[in-house]
Amino acid sequence: MEHTIRQLVSGLHIGYHGGGMLFWKWTRDGEIQILLGRRLSGTDGGKWCLPGGSWEKTDGFSADGKPDYHRTALRTAHRETGYAIPEQDDITCIWSIHAPFFHTSVFTYRMREEHVCIEFVTERFSEGGWFDIHELPEPLEYFLPLQLHQFRKKLHRLERLRNSSLLM
Image 1 (tube, rainbow, N blue to C red):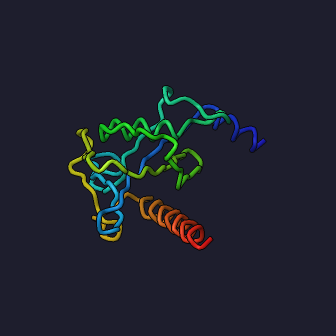
Image 2 (cartoon, rainbow, N blue to C red; image 1 turned 135 degrees about the vertical axis):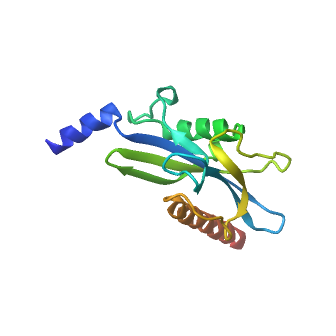
């Protein structure tokens, strides 16, 4: 019975479904910077967060019939920053949460284009900018520390792989 209710609720897409994008880049000094914006209103009003937002029907569905959070992240990141990600195969999911009535995934994209200046272009943010990953502004959106923890783990794994391939 409980399984049937879950399937029914999942099929109706009740609750919040969304996606976000963590834009990041290496500085010339070898430091990592991430793009954050301070939201003006909503549950994250006044807090620093990643570009992202709610799933829409036009985002479509994944192969398993669930909302396509990847497309949501791409669309909302473009809407909020004006930047269209050119290499979609470089996007990696680093964090997801699927709780009753709350489903979201965060993806990362490494900025390689040095000449591109991306910033928040909508009226949903009071300010935004690039921040050193070790010196972030406060207050942060509730889940952002968890998302950054997963991001750091991913970078650590990549560094280990790169070092092990250099040894071979």
